[in-house]
Length: 366
Image (tube, rainbow, N blue to C red; front, top):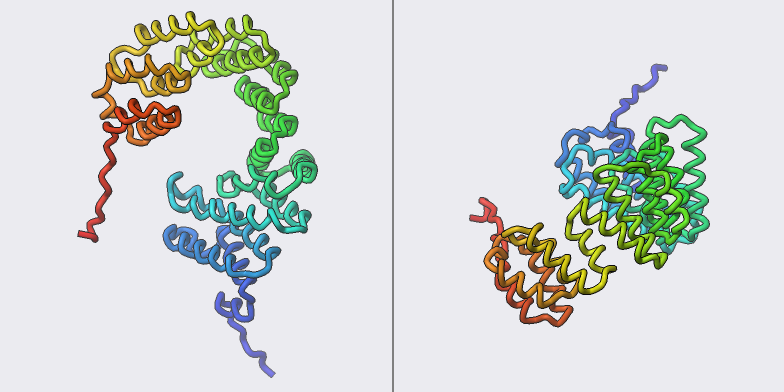
């Protein structure tokens, strides 16, 4: 008897699949680059949005977490779109959804397995980064560190094609967990030559964690830095000396930092640790020799931070008409900060120069 021929079509394969299996199938096809819509970006956005809505309707948290992990695994498609594209909102929503469910889900090992796979299969795109940065929201520190170390072991024991991406995932995890020793390991595996940039990045991680001994250890490795590296080196040196209470040394580094890089942020560092009279002199000289005859938004920020209200009033009055050319969002931020300081009159003066951008009108609406 002749066997009946079975047509192997997508429609035939779909027959009998459950709702969960159907979502999983679509997401895996997209993640592996096999879905028909992979090069039709608008259609792909619609399909992904639909899958996210379907996941929301599933009642099992365990299944939701697994499908959300598959959703995040499709973030390779972000390489096809601009950074401000609405695609990124989809992945932000999916990450927040995953974190929210994981926070209350009791089987933490299941969550760790999913996150482990997300890290090891990292595409290098940002769709899943929020999950890595937020481990402390749904895992205890011990479990999270243990998982991250197992990922590090995987990197060191296997020849992964995406090794750099996995190490970046580890850096995100370490950053979120405030675990500088793990951050150091991942960073120097990425940069075995130990560039000044990486050394300073790791030193900053230790400083944020409050470990001055390790911060200074790394700073001692930096030799003759130039440009951005020198600025970062001096900034961290100021911070360490100040935190240790060695004000003369902090002033020494801060003066060098400002002389070489005369930015408002670096001036702020210096004026906050020198005597009041010296601070006023520095501000006078900065206005006279550094700023010129154009309004400087960063200087206004500096004066607000230092609460130099009289000086700020004089500066704003001098360049009041220039406020018309400042971004409305920046002016609004100034107004909010001044109102918080109860400087309502000055806030009102700046507010009157805020000009809202006209809304774009769609031709179809005319």
